[in-house]
Amino acid sequence: MTSETIITDPSLLAVLEAADLARQQCDELLSLLAAHPRSKATDKLPSDVEAAVSTAQKTLHAHLAHVRNLNRKALHGVRATKAATADARHEVDTLHLQLQNLYYEERHLQGEIAACEAYDHPYQRLPLLPVDDFCAAFPDIANEVAGDEDALMVARIDHEHKERMALEEKRQGLLKRKQGLIAENKKRKEDLANLDKDLEKFIEAARPIEQTFQKEY
Image 1: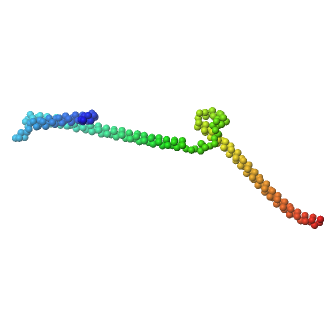
Image 2 (image 1 turned 135 degrees about the horizontal axis):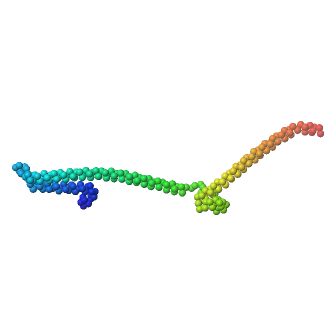
Image 3 (image 1 turned 45 degrees about the horizontal axis):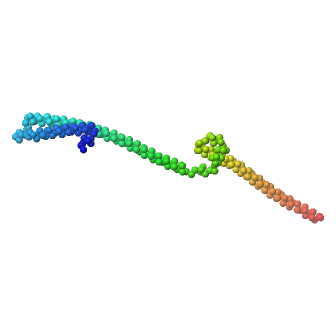
């Protein structure tokens, strides 16, 4: 597997191509120097070889400058890609967190719904009028809420509430009447007690008269 099969970014491929040209130029320069060693006496190259080496060095410097320029551009591109990747990762993380929150909220709501459905509400134990009897007694309401079980249940509960309010009002009336009768009976007992006392006083007062009659007869 070569670098060309791994790297697909155009800017990086351009850097590799420029670096390869610089390497080839460097190899050519080394080959030229190896083929024309310096003179031991003067430690210099022949003039034509010196010119060729100078030209090769300039070409190599140009290639290296081009490599550095392309490498700088590639680094800027990599930094921009990293920044874009970081932004995209942050957005993905934010969306993932929001999705997790939605899952949590969904599970919470499902739990609340299940708790509400399983809640043993007191209205389920109310001695309501059976559905058939209620519909027969109140056909207008039955027609109005036809097909709506919740509305029918509310109507039955409302009917039960009214019935209990009427019974409570009747009970309160009977309670007041009972209290009135108790008060009246108490007053009569007091009147009878007073009458007994008055009668005893009358008997006591009449006793001397009775004794007088007994003496005379």
